[in-house]
Length: 312
Image (tube, rainbow, N blue to C red):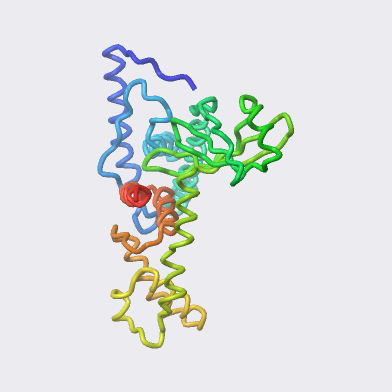
């Protein structure tokens, strides 16, 4: 994908700023029609201004989604010449409006991934020496970091000899702040038609460590919370993992109402912005939920917490 020219005339710069300002104003009017309860939208405190010549891989994900939704919704909200008023009011009612925004959000995310993939320099992925004991290769990328490929020892020589011919496909991404990080990618050796998946090294290591020291495992093994001894006044005193265990206990006994009350405390903690005690796996799911709901302020806070944990 070609980058925009680095130099613009004064008038063109002014025109771009005016267009962006209009998008910000339209954004406020557009999303003010969506209630927080029905869609969970949380309006960001600021809008990222897209700089002249900004390459696509630096374009914030939330900015791309907002522009995409604004462009499509402005046309969708127009009443057709041959559309009856009653039909128009039904089509643009709150329920269908919210469904349209959700659909456009998903479309924007998919399109962003496609365009983002075009910016990746696959030739920049370097194959490091083979680890014969563990039967794996490590791949290094200046853009994304290191990746691990499990390759049987009898297949390793062919992959190394034909590294310049390999093909990359089936990428999987994770959202890091307002951009994407390559989580996993399929690598195919065209010489022997064998394929392997390269997984982000830091994520692979973190997942292994979390399985060893998971708070959930510790709770289930060492902190068996007795539902007979716990009352509603005790819920705020329990840890996140204890609450999850307690909720499961009540669900198994068929006491759904009590389980719902415990879920209320769990949800309160997840929404509070205080993420202490929430397992990383669950926090990653909450992050994806926040991004899909376009609650970018909350998503940013969750991402900050995940980055802190990854640095430890």
